[in-house]
Image (cartoon, rainbow, N blue to C red):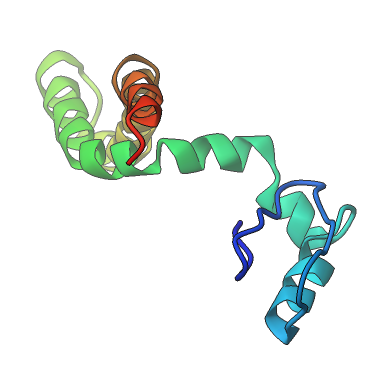
Length: 118
Protein backbone atom coordinates (compact mmCIF):
# COMPACT_ATOMS: atom_id res chain seq x y z
CA UNK A 1 0.00 0.00 0.00
CA UNK A 2 1.33 3.44 -0.87
CA UNK A 3 0.99 6.44 1.40
CA UNK A 4 0.60 9.89 -0.14
CA UNK A 5 4.31 10.85 0.10
CA UNK A 6 5.44 7.66 -1.70
CA UNK A 7 6.42 5.57 1.31
CA UNK A 8 5.36 1.97 1.37
CA UNK A 9 3.24 0.66 4.21
CA UNK A 10 3.31 -3.10 3.97
CA UNK A 11 2.57 -6.02 6.24
CA UNK A 12 3.97 -5.28 9.65
CA UNK A 13 5.74 -2.18 8.36
CA UNK A 14 4.44 0.78 10.28
CA UNK A 15 7.01 3.53 10.62
CA UNK A 16 5.54 6.98 10.05
CA UNK A 17 8.00 9.56 8.71
CA UNK A 18 7.56 12.97 7.18
CA UNK A 19 4.44 15.13 7.21
CA UNK A 20 1.36 13.54 8.73
CA UNK A 21 -2.05 14.03 7.27
CA UNK A 22 -5.32 12.62 8.51
CA UNK A 23 -5.31 10.06 5.70
CA UNK A 24 -1.82 8.81 6.63
CA UNK A 25 -2.79 8.51 10.29
CA UNK A 26 -5.89 6.48 9.39
CA UNK A 27 -3.81 4.15 7.21
CA UNK A 28 -1.22 3.65 9.92
CA UNK A 29 -3.82 3.00 12.62
CA UNK A 30 -5.76 0.54 10.49
CA UNK A 31 -2.76 -1.32 9.11
CA UNK A 32 -0.58 -1.49 12.21
CA UNK A 33 0.50 -5.03 13.13
CA UNK A 34 -2.04 -7.03 15.08
CA UNK A 35 -5.09 -5.10 13.87
CA UNK A 36 -7.87 -6.89 12.02
CA UNK A 37 -7.42 -5.08 8.66
CA UNK A 38 -3.72 -5.91 8.71
CA UNK A 39 -4.49 -9.57 9.34
CA UNK A 40 -6.95 -9.60 6.43
CA UNK A 41 -4.86 -7.65 3.92
CA UNK A 42 -1.63 -9.47 4.83
CA UNK A 43 -3.17 -12.94 4.60
CA UNK A 44 -0.89 -14.98 2.33
CA UNK A 45 -3.76 -16.79 0.62
CA UNK A 46 -5.52 -13.54 -0.27
CA UNK A 47 -2.24 -12.00 -1.45
CA UNK A 48 -1.60 -14.96 -3.77
CA UNK A 49 -5.15 -14.81 -5.09
CA UNK A 50 -4.64 -11.10 -5.71
CA UNK A 51 -1.59 -11.81 -7.84
CA UNK A 52 -3.53 -14.11 -10.14
CA UNK A 53 -6.83 -12.20 -10.06
CA UNK A 54 -6.54 -10.77 -13.57
CA UNK A 55 -5.71 -14.17 -15.04
CA UNK A 56 -8.63 -15.72 -13.18
CA UNK A 57 -10.94 -13.03 -14.52
CA UNK A 58 -9.76 -13.56 -18.09
CA UNK A 59 -9.88 -17.36 -17.96
CA UNK A 60 -12.95 -18.12 -15.85
CA UNK A 61 -15.49 -18.02 -18.70
CA UNK A 62 -13.36 -20.27 -20.88
CA UNK A 63 -12.75 -22.75 -18.06
CA UNK A 64 -16.39 -22.87 -16.98
CA UNK A 65 -17.54 -23.61 -20.53
CA UNK A 66 -14.75 -26.15 -21.14
CA UNK A 67 -15.69 -27.98 -17.93
CA UNK A 68 -19.35 -27.84 -18.94
CA UNK A 69 -18.55 -29.38 -22.33
CA UNK A 70 -16.40 -32.14 -20.81
CA UNK A 71 -18.95 -32.95 -18.13
CA UNK A 72 -21.83 -33.10 -20.60
CA UNK A 73 -19.95 -35.08 -23.21
CA UNK A 74 -17.90 -37.56 -21.21
CA UNK A 75 -19.72 -38.20 -17.93
CA UNK A 76 -22.98 -39.79 -16.94
CA UNK A 77 -23.85 -37.22 -14.28
CA UNK A 78 -27.36 -35.86 -14.16
CA UNK A 79 -27.91 -32.46 -15.81
CA UNK A 80 -28.74 -30.94 -12.41
CA UNK A 81 -25.40 -32.02 -10.97
CA UNK A 82 -23.61 -30.67 -14.02
CA UNK A 83 -25.31 -27.28 -13.83
CA UNK A 84 -24.61 -26.99 -10.09
CA UNK A 85 -21.02 -28.25 -10.23
CA UNK A 86 -20.00 -26.41 -13.39
CA UNK A 87 -19.30 -23.00 -11.79
CA UNK A 88 -17.42 -24.49 -8.83
CA UNK A 89 -15.20 -26.74 -10.89
CA UNK A 90 -14.79 -24.09 -13.60
CA UNK A 91 -13.66 -21.36 -11.21
CA UNK A 92 -11.30 -23.80 -9.45
CA UNK A 93 -9.88 -24.70 -12.86
CA UNK A 94 -9.54 -21.02 -13.75
CA UNK A 95 -7.63 -20.33 -10.52
CA UNK A 96 -5.32 -23.29 -11.22
CA UNK A 97 -4.68 -22.22 -14.83
CA UNK A 98 -4.16 -18.59 -13.76
CA UNK A 99 -1.63 -19.71 -11.13
CA UNK A 100 0.29 -21.70 -13.72
CA UNK A 101 0.10 -18.76 -16.13
CA UNK A 102 1.44 -16.44 -13.43
CA UNK A 103 4.52 -18.58 -12.78
CA UNK A 104 5.28 -19.44 -16.42
CA UNK A 105 4.31 -16.26 -18.26
CA UNK A 106 3.54 -13.20 -16.13
CA UNK A 107 6.21 -13.39 -13.42
CA UNK A 108 9.16 -13.63 -15.86
CA UNK A 109 7.77 -10.71 -17.86
CA UNK A 110 7.38 -8.58 -14.74
CA UNK A 111 10.91 -9.42 -13.63
CA UNK A 112 12.26 -8.55 -17.08
CA UNK A 113 10.34 -5.26 -17.08
CA UNK A 114 12.12 -4.23 -13.86
CA UNK A 115 15.39 -4.11 -15.80
CA UNK A 116 14.11 -1.47 -18.23
CA UNK A 117 13.18 1.39 -15.94
CA UNK A 118 12.73 4.76 -17.61
